[in-house]
Amino acid sequence: MRSVSIAVSVMVAVRVWTWIGPPRAHPVTGPAAAVLLVVLSGLPAASVGLTLTGWVYALSGVALIAAGYGAGLLLPYARRALAEPSFPAPWRTALVEIPLATVVFEEVAFRGVLWALISAAHGPAWATAGTAVLFGLWHISPDPGVRRQVGAVAFTTLAGLVLGLLRDLSGGLLAPFALHWAANGLGVLASTVVRRRASGPATGDSSGS
Image (tube, rainbow, N blue to C red; front, side, top):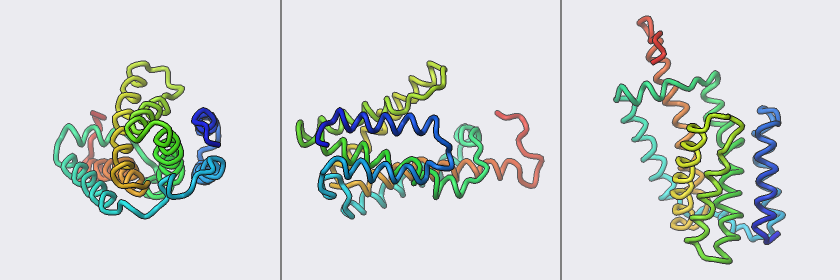
């Protein structure tokens, strides 16, 4: 399966499944779909980025994200933003659902198979730009809110650009995987810290602001 169009078709099918399928199944179907995509691509593991290279980039990226959330916990505005989402099972969300249901497939699909296919045909610059745009479009959801949709697409396109650059610089998926997980997983844990502090010994923040 050397065709980018076929790869995108498989990815679209997976995206639809994430909308309509039971959430409990996603930590299983995400990795399974990633394996299927790699197998169908016919690409060698190294070409897809399935190597252990880039661990320095990976550790640096996680440290940078952790420092950013740590700084955010000190700023009132950032704390209010972090407190908005609620996660009933934050540790499971951060350590199981996010890496397995989201990060594994998205990194293998975008920075792995799709990046390799475009790079082989047009070079890494086009691969990084193309996968960034598609990564942004990937985050369009059934939510009818136009402003939210535009913001999500713009933000995730920029994130896809950073992750694609990491893929190119590091030579593998380890660094983009680590950064992607840190941005989402550590965000869940930071949100939980803020909420627990707000509802701690005092009466907590009941204003919702």
